[in-house]
Length: 224
Image 1: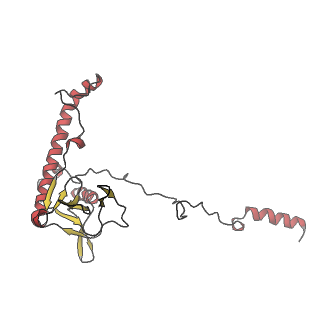
Image 2: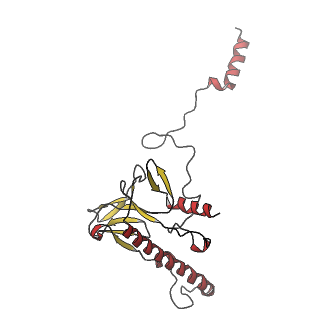
Image 3: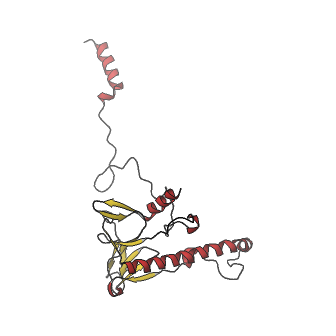
């Protein structure tokens, strides 16, 4: 082979993708895993408040009444107490809870009643905040931190108090309705997730409650 042919072959080999070794992306992390090319969006698709339910004003008059059931996780806790530090620490479980147990009919009705009361209080706070907003605008322009009635401005989240419902045998556990948590009432113990069930999915021979965000979206789509 002449020198000109070798030079031409060398030039073409530089242009060919098959002559180059693949470029391995730089690994990152403690165990050398490569950085993912695509990252999942976190909380950008839907925004749903902690109530996870539609306003009753949006339901048709002939719509049957919703009869929710309340459940609690029974396999993976949200967090465990740390007696040495005197506080609970958030855990990063390997998987989301898959086993949910239903509260008794009595406990479920008590939790739902507290939930509806919390919703009424929040709706009332939103309405009163809307009515007072016009008076607050003029005071904010003057640099004041008080409303037209002389009371300090507070956010709705600060105004809502934690609502707990005693449940289970001898009422040894409390359900935090706002934060959807089940915890022991008189000792330190693991805290489990609580879920309001309105829509369910089939998992083998068992029906399990859907995530409350998903259930709210299904309810909206069903009413359309």
